[in-house]
Length: 61
Image 1 (tube, one colour):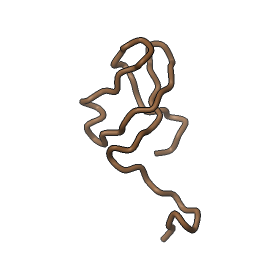
Image 2 (cartoon, one colour):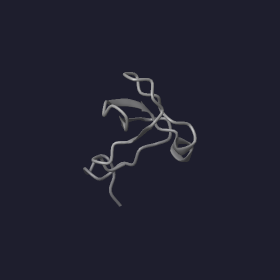
Image 3 (cartoon, helix red, strand yellow):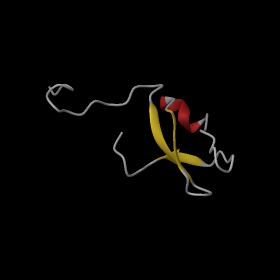
């Protein structure tokens, strides 16, 4: 089993800040990940105030 000390992958925990991207304006920002509640409670874009956001798909979570 890999650990953080051996350079292995450490998964995000609920409440950690992750990178989100706004689908309307394309702005990338950090917000708290709410686990399975992220689909219900959307992160709000600080640039255009849109709730049409998703986790950045370029980053493996």
